[in-house]
Amino acid sequence: MPHTPMPAIATRYPHLAGSPRAMAMTAAALHLSGRTEDAVELALAAVAAAPADMIVHQTVRRALNRGVARFHDSMMRDEVRNRAYARAIEAAVRPGMTVLEIGAGSGLLAMIAARAGARVVTCEAVPAVAATARTIVARNGYADRVRVVAKRSTDLEIGVDLDEPADLLVHEIFGHMLVNEGVTAAVADARARLLKPGAPSVPPRAEIRVALAAFIGQRSPQIGEIEGFDLSPFGILLPPRGASILDATGRIAPRSEPASLLRMEYDSPAPFGPDRETVRLVSTGGSVDLVAQWMRIDFGGGNMLGTDPFADGQAVSWGAPLFLLPMPIKTTAGDGIDVTVRHDGHALTIDAAAAG
Figure (tube, rainbow, N blue to C red):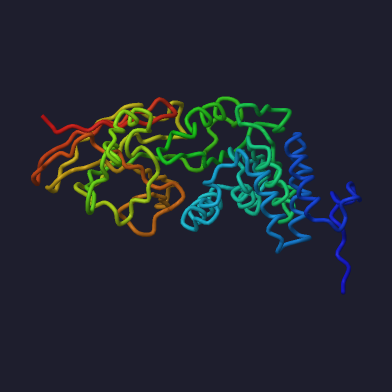
């Protein structure tokens, strides 16, 4: 049987040799003490040593996934998203240029840029994610071209984290409401401090899309009487109805054509676009229960990435928020409903009312 060399991290903990569960527990303790690099390396060694041991897997996952957003899983699996970004990055990169990426995640986009010939600095605020991305980059042979910095982009410094301002910005810090992961502030800061004047970004623009919609089947009731008790006051403690990610496919039907608002131009000076816009949507008739909202990213050259809940072949990473009207609006074909979308750089609000 061929000899499998012991991982370098394990040589620093010889007393753990032959005990993957002890390695996993030590990795958890290292992570709690802030030694994230060692924790990730030892956790991977434990899993490699006992790939079928459920206790090992559970121990390292419970320890390391604190603070790691669940959307990373769907993002990495989203082939539509990944291909759209890859096409855009490959078209934008020129050999030898310096690329700054905001939000390393798994390191995928940074490695795509490096494969195209760039030198890449990518930053990641979550230490465990940064440490794992660094391992992934090294495992794929790009450690000499990709530097993973465990910082927020707003904490990066020229001369410390980057040798000079970058030639190109890559960013994918969009929330399902476009702005709710802080893309506006992060890109504005990078453009002011970390990029060469006129440096392009990938993607260069994005926008909000909205449409009127109705539930297929019965509308979900508000909190009210349950088991003979009036629980309606608890409603004030809950998020606004519909203002969370929902898989809307097959659950709603459109009641209007979609419209675009709040187009953001990230190659322009901040704030990149308006913070409020109103559009009149024309109903196709019937009851209108909600406003469906999604986003569309425009990479240029016909390369578009959307999360349209009514269309097939869309990105699935973000989902489509549904903003329920307090009361359904009964309409006939041709009736107008004015939809106003506002944002403050982080939160998005939507208001709808029958046109006067």
